[in-house]
Image 1 (tube, rainbow over the protein chains, first blue to last red):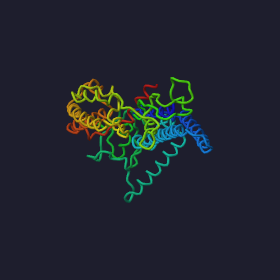
Image 2 (cartoon, rainbow over the protein chains, first blue to last red; image 1 turned 180 degrees about the horizontal axis):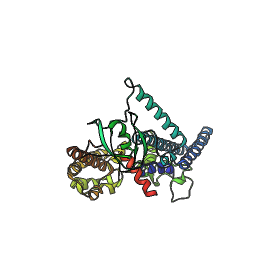
Image 3 (cartoon, each protein chain N blue to C red; image 1 turned 90 degrees about the vertical axis):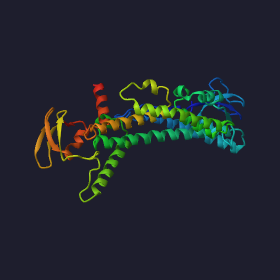
Image 4 (tube, one colour; image 1 turned 60 degrees about the vertical axis):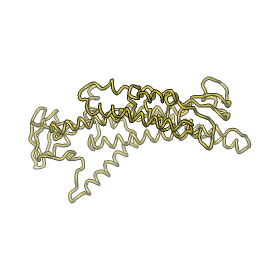
Length: 194
Length: 183
């Protein structure tokens, strides 16, 4: 059936769940592109036949044209939606994505991600005098210091005043909120409230 | 949604398009044959300017079903009638069916009747199994229900002062869970 491959891409998108990115389906995309190419060639042929005098081919051309448009729409949706997911991941995971997610991205997506990263960094540096980290303070802060517990071994961590603390599992620390917010969002630390 | 099939009748011969109809081996499709075309194709082939095919109103939007909706829209399983019942109904507006005005009116009143229940449920159900309720909602209604539920839980968290606590981002948590399953 026409454009069914392209529809599979869309179904794949809707199956995906939060926290994961399905592998870039290069195979399927190539098949869709091949289909589009043959549709286009067939259309060209029919058009030149019509010019040569044959009649009644118009409806076929119309069908193929609709299929071409449909394929294009599905492909663009697929690519755009993936970019949206990747963009969201930048805010959730931070500037470095986990390996298995990176692995599922295609080359262009990786370079897009890097450019997005860079743009975001440049923009954040340009705010105010010394820059502002927009990914910080997602909720309004109540206190400067907070009590945190380590959920896993993370290694050494240097605080702003130069002290080095070792983040070991189940250790509890009293740290600057601004310093450990990222680690909490990434699941290394847990905020302890009483 | 635009992949949904729609019953259509061919008006002009479709040359060399035999593959669209799987029941014949002929190269061409003669006028008068009936086909099930996906919406996007029917849309391109049936417009005011060109009438290559003519389309029929899908069953779920016909008179008999409209009567059912009028009787009591609340008990109907919309998901079964089409997971995107409202949206598809809206898409149908582009074809010039004689009864299309009735269809749109019916969609609106159906939504109005059902919305009360959805809103009510989404604001009052806490920690209960909602699958029985959501199973006969169409996709848009499901999304509405989810938004309502989220606002309810958000409000509860705020009331119990749990918003202040910094948490691991949901996406990271989901990602970690999946990884643990893989291992």
